[in-house]
Length: 162
Image 1 (cartoon, rainbow, N blue to C red):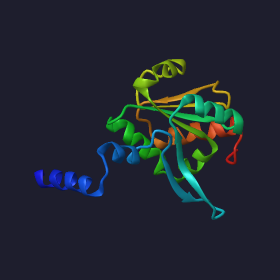
Image 2: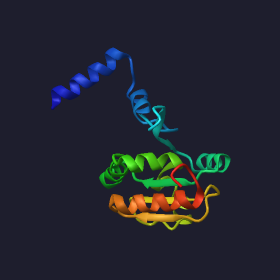
Image 3: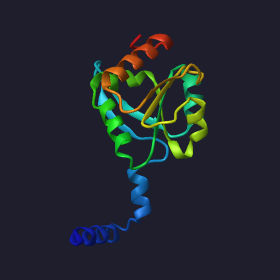
Image 4: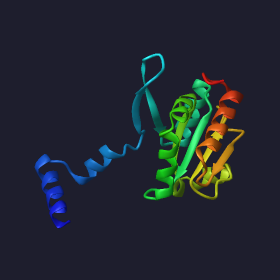
């Protein structure tokens, strides 16, 4: 194990990268992206998170898309597995393109969590384009519950899955 850390430190020194820059590269403060292709063959971002409630709400209003807000705690395994459960499912990944995806660290955004009645994690909140009419999924729920809620919100507010 010590050899691993020594190699890691040497790699950082040789590459001329600071640990701070590596951390920034690994977790962007603005968004997290991954690509996939749609049924029509065009590449699209499968998951593009916005890490600011205000920016997400402005974009939701501008594009007239509902929001899906995930509240998480860094380094909390349940939050990480919750996200993987959702986006490893092809239907959920496809339905997510109908939402403005906002990812908020719970501890830094408790006022927003309180606004939507979130008191436990992991939590997803679905809203209309105006940020109102929130539906919440709290706790480690199964994918069918999540898909059902996603479908309801897309049907209520529009999108390609309506």
